[in-house]
Length: 162
Image 1: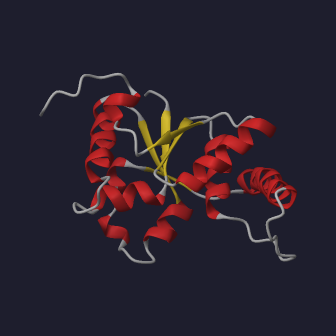
Image 2 (image 1 turned 135 degrees about the vertical axis):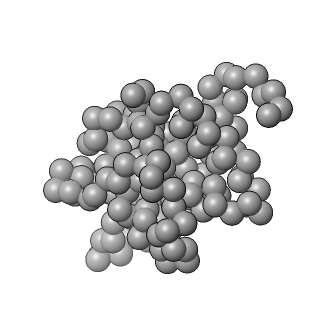
């Protein structure tokens, strides 16, 4: 198996909604990953987010490895969240005394802790900004893949019609 990809909620929403503008990109990534032996991962956190408006049975679970949120993920999440909150404070953004940990930070920690995961796939531009910030301070081991960029461009493939 090649390197694994942790797919966030935005990927699955776009993959399963044929009317979404990024559906074609999501479908292209999904096909590319499955045909080229990448490990596909989904966090229990992404499943919970998806189930707010969707049904768990809609997810392609037979093609996915489920990553539960564990103790080592929680510890790394705290480290990542500290970096993000300090950056907010230094930019004079309002930070609540009661600190809530964003789900993206939790899934970043999962991607960082799990040996089999080398990529994080999302269409969320705010998540990408947090990843860039983390790269400056903590050097996460995974790469961020932007769903807005077609898989053919990301992997240098010819965009031939199917």
